[in-house]
Length: 388
Image (cartoon, rainbow, N blue to C red; front, side):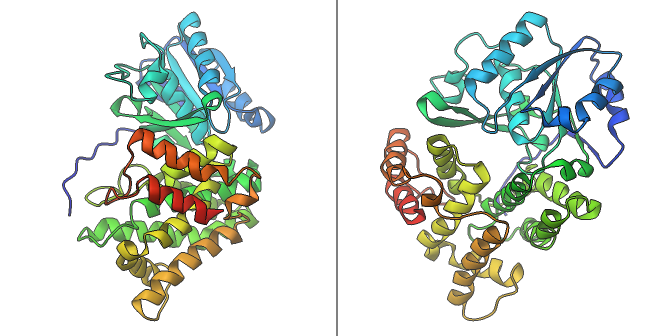
């Protein structure tokens, strides 16, 4: 078992009919002034959630920022930063899925930053956010686990970049998780959420065997639960028990617990981010595209863990090599059963250009990713090429 430090200060408020508790959580944070409600394209207006929030927060002075994209855009978020500065906002309430919550993390850090905030994301010199406004979340889409961690991913389309950020400043003060909200989501978003949670788990599990048996068993439990309930939620998102399990799995997949004492990978994510930046493909779908090909490319070094995954999660039998290979196939088939295409060429006619672009970006950034730090420019390009 590897050394680790673990701290997660996020207060989780889980279940239906919990929204009336929101004022007490703001009071706990000593919020008495202006609250900015940050949200996306307007689905919370159509479902009535925004009206319910206004009702329970009637004693607060509310401001609103609408329009956070599915891949939150730097230029959009800087408008929110300026609004917060002008209106002296005291607290940000992010209402949405991972994109809105990620946006909030960037915004609360950028508000008091004296300089170009993109420099922090681009890791320029010593640029870093030194403080942040407090924020909380109301989760509407289970997927990224952003409601219970301190990481975020921000896009800048004019330069086709997608960058990560995070740190102790960016944990939400609280997060409300209501599984009934899943019933308001389009099927596409539900499928994406299932894949997100599944891949977050695999990134912290599908490396090489360790002696941290608890974390491995927890990862396997999340994967098995998602396989069991994922199709049920797609078929009937009003099934409260299935929806609740999906929401809780997505949170546990990336609240920091699974990484304790184990090696992690994340190469699939970093390659996937480049595909989103280039072609605007949904984040989860880039993971479904990249992961099977990455596991094939790195088959020998991941074979032992692929075998364990195949036996424990998919109940496969055969020789070790057969089980490992079949585990990759089962994973890809699962994604396809959720209605997700796993080939890059299906998403853009410009897909072949990604091979050279990804290679060049890995070289520019001197990236060596994966649990063994051996996913370099050459291997990343091969993975993308095989994903076409």
